Length: 304
Image (cartoon, rainbow, N blue to C red; front, side, top):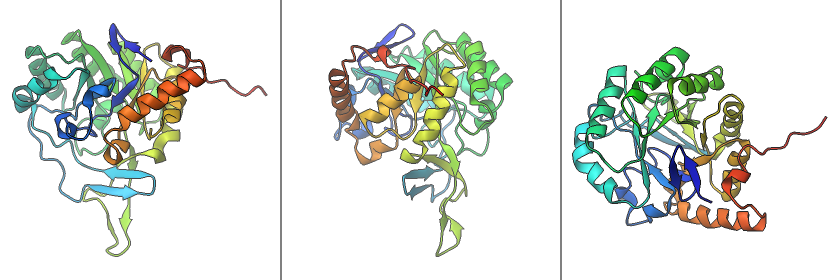
C-alpha cells in the first residue's frame, strides 16, 4: 500500500485534507494521527487572520459549505508553536501555504524553510474560493500559476504540490502551468462554489453569501477533474473530494490519482484514516492488488 511522491515514501495513499484536521494536535485525544500516510496542516499565511465573520459553516444534504476565510495563527507563531509539535509526529507532514499576494506566499515559505522542520513538503493553496482577495486569482490564471510555482520552486527542494480549483474553465491547463513551473505534484480538487438560503430569514446561510462546497456531493466532479488532469500532465495527482469509503479511494486511484486526501468526513469520524487503511488493505487482498501503482489510472473505457 506504500506510495512514493518524488523521493518520499508514504505508508499509505491516505492523507488528511488541509483545514479538516487542524494542525494535528487538536484531534490527538480522539485519533492516532500517525496512522495516516501523512497529514496536510491547515493553511498558514504570512500574517495572522481571523477569517470571515460568522455564520461561516452550513450543512448541506451531502456535505457542507464553508467560508472560514483561512483563519490561522500567522507564520511567525506557526514556526514557534506548531512546528515543534509537527516535528514529533511519526507520520509525514505537509504544510499548506496560502496568501493574498506573491510576496505573502514567498515570505511565508522562506520563514518555514528557515526553521529546518521535519515536514516533507508544501501544498500551495492557489484555489480557495472562500477568500475575498488573493489566492483564487492565481488558481484561475495559467501565467500566474506558473510564475508562483517557479518562485516557490526556487525556495525549496522539498515536495511542492499546487492545489487546484475546480472553478475554472479548463483545470488541465492550470495543472500544466503548475507542471511547467516545477511542481512535483498537483492536488485536485478544492471546494466547489456553493450557496444555501435560510427559508425563514430568506438570508444566505453564510455571512459571505457564497462558500466552498465539500463532502460526498462533489465526488463525481472531483473524479472527473482528476481524470482530466491525469490525461494532461506527467506528475502525480492527489485526489480530493467526498471520500468516505475505501471504494471511493479506489475510484480516485483508477481515475489517475496517486494519493488521496480525506476532508469533510473527518468531522464525522476523526479515526476515519485508520478505518480506511484497514478497508483498503482488505480490498487489495480480495482483488489481488499487490501495490497501489497497479490501480493508478487503470480505468477501462467502454468499447463502442
